[in-house]
Image (cartoon, rainbow, N blue to C red; front, side):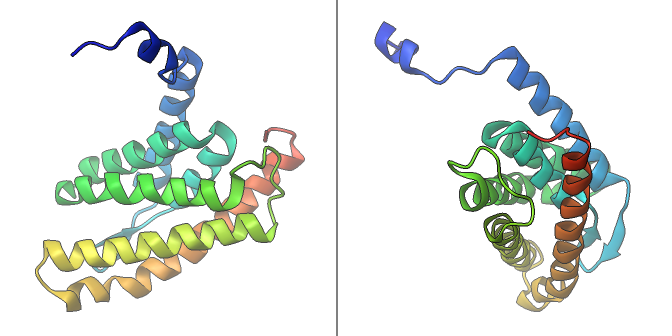
Length: 178
């Protein structure tokens, strides 16, 4: 029932700094998701995915996953889309993890315009598009409705990839990226 001393020592630790950074990044994702809302079928387009990519690059895997999932879900709650909170938590967490695993895993100093980083963004956005398409089909009991959101999600993805590259480039030039 209780963890033994060896299990407790082996458990991954989360520092106060990591908690604070994850919270700040979640707020960043929330603002990027909530403020520029452009209506598309079954939801809205925003810049939150680009913020998720930056959060993963700047704060690391765990903080980036937390920021992506909870910042985006909070935007759904505040924006009047509570039915999307659970799908968003899952989709954005997996999206951030896909980006990390493809683009950054084992690479402490990624080059922003490398094939690996761009490929990670594309793979993550394709997963996100498929995830929201299927979630929409399930939530609204209509594959046609789910598919209606796909073009908007793909355009949103392209805009978010470009925004992440532009913002990441500016951060790199300013010496603020890791």
